[in-house]
Image 1 (cartoon, rainbow, N blue to C red):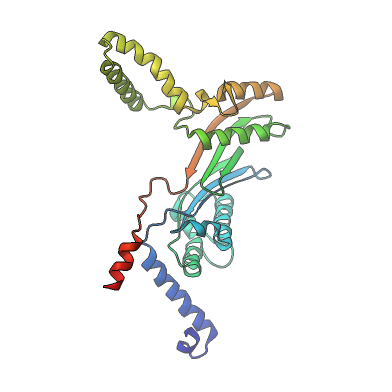
Image 2: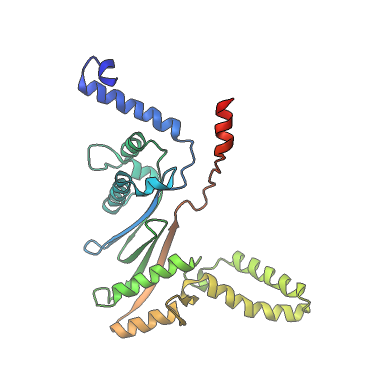
Length: 278
């Protein structure tokens, strides 16, 4: 149809298809995209790690080869170019004559769903990454260490990344917990103790003990190691540093869960079909 409209001009036909692709993308942009995949990768040679989330409308698109290649391609652009934000990323060349923005629009045309690059994080230095369940969760952890090249460190790094994936800590350590979060937690714990019938003075003392449990649940360094409940991540890190004969410090981490925070549409297919038959 495009060739007919372009009177057989192949280049013009491509232009028409591209233009209609953009129109299609615009129409689909308002549709909820909460599926897709999270991808994480690390280049040991260049010491750059990237974790990225790209969303689509349905879960099976996350397994589509073209979609997966697109996600990996965008991650490579992030790794190579260090974009400051999403707008900067979208303007960068994808590597095939199109920008990332244009390639995303091309994917909408090819796959037929709303596709959005949602977020990314880029780390430089010694990094460990982990992808859970084919892209439902992606984790990246950054270290300050002088033993990254020693046998045993890679396994340790993956252990920590898997810990972040499984236990979902909100903070690295106790000092990172914002004062307002801590005060709110203490307030809740105090009310809980009073509701249990404890006098206010006793409730105050109980809060101090219970706040330690909050730290153990929410701070990575205080969490019980999922592979060995007798160790915390802090003690596991200290033991591994001693074993490898150097220093290991966890500097930061990022955990992306596919679709987190996006309000998903609940499709009522029966109602939809019924409305179409009226």
